[in-house]
Image (cartoon, rainbow, N blue to C red):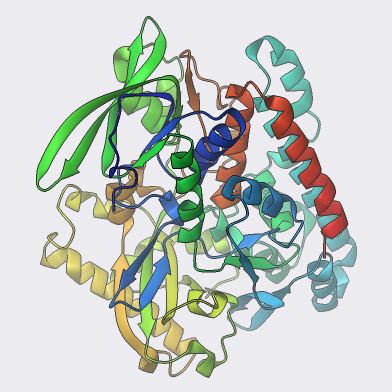
Length: 537
């Protein structure tokens, strides 16, 4: 269904949002609710939601493409309160098992339990000789997460307050902008302990030697109080927001790829979009007083603005390191994976304690040798699931798949299919080695590659997380909601954190910059913070 296309489409709106990921939808919902703006959301894919959309096979198997679990979604939780406002409370969240993550290494396994402080207690019980270092580690992750909050606040300040922004960012930056590996090496002597605390690096897509300690700290703090999964799957998020937009005279149009941002006298005045359907492509222009891009900083400045206006940071973005991509094996089961002892927890499997060494061996994936794997079981997390499912993920680069760029889905040739078959076989072999009988459950399987992300999102190098969370990213003073072009703004994960919550907060930040009713949002943010303190499990 093309959302909103059953009604007449006009050409002018109060605001245009490029991309229907959670960052863009957050902006659209907030502006529609708070200011009654008419908002046009343009999405290149045939389904809205970005990495919160889902797909179905054989009528009963359904998978999320990006949401596996989210923290702080307990009733009264900070992000639950904010997302409830964006969705008008229409999304329910199901708590995962108490032991929501299991980390598996060659001769050790460790379970992450829900409840603030339990991770610390369990680490000390396993590594009593590192007690003092563990205590200091938890102090440091909280400090680095608070620094990240000040960084986000500094991004809201106008250019004339640049000195104040520096004051907010400077204290604690040495800790926050160290690499995760440098920090862990300085704090812990036990290699197994270092591996365990870094086990969740897939949640932001960078191994310890590349990631900023701030993003590691944010991820750790975010999962202190259990993981949650949306009842009915992540698609319920977009499904709840689209009617809010349309109720305020807005539209969400899918199969509309924005090709350029229209700029007149240094001011963004609209967009040109290419709509596709029934084998035809049609170019349309839409105008608005405010343009918000959720397409990412690189796509926005390099492709959508292009040479239409001077962008001083364009070269810096072109030379910025690529993020990582991944392959995902989607599985449909004949019977419940609970038969093998799974309860809905995620499994992180590693064949080495050195995450950076595993990262440097990622090309082995192409030959079917899998050194690490994340296993998620969405049907065990969602009480409304219609079929039993699993998702197996491992990281690798886009480069080996570049040769097939431009070839349509299912028409990329035998060599491409052979690579996919080797990868899928390697992932199943790894799971069978750890969980005998795993293969016997499989009824359906399908592998996505970095080309899937490239074709559906346009992200450079098939990056799933946008700009990588390296220390340099959080040192860029220009990576904010404001752009050098009047009436053009950025939103989403690039200007904030990673994942659904990072994109959500990016949406709130951009709305705070563009709205005339900041007090409404500020009250909401403060209330959410207060509720979280009282409701924390």
